[in-house]
Image 1 (cartoon, rainbow, N blue to C red):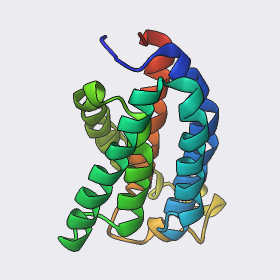
Image 2: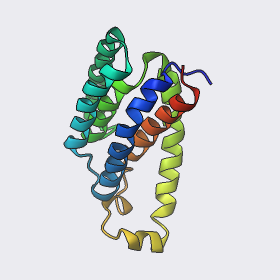
Image 3: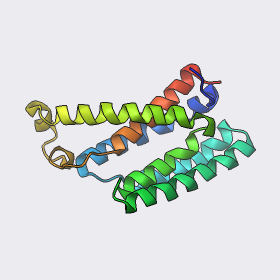
Image 4: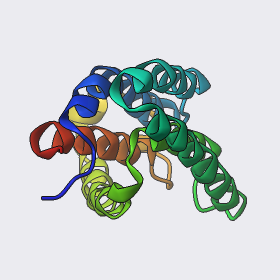
Length: 166
């Protein structure tokens, strides 16, 4: 597997990515909302950790990823393709991704959408699992908590970076 993300960057980013991703998944499945605080934690985290993980030109360039994905996400939100929280969260994740890894990340995302959607729909039909989290809004909603797939993609990408990174 070819991945541009360095092992060093993946190792620096992963300790932030895991807890924020768990937070986002839990919140999105329970309330169908992604907290703005989670988005801010990621952006502030990239602001600090990116300086440690990347050389300065790459670090500065990666901020443009945030802007591009934020604009694309809001256009998609206006077209009712995804929620505003999903758009903001995806934009906050974008600086962590090397531009050259875009196809890899989109491939991981496609797989995580299928896996996440399937697992979510199966789990919500299993009564003992639903009884553990009876008030989760995503169990009864028609729409899917996309923060689950975005989070899984983010963490998987960084794990691939740790294993296969440059």
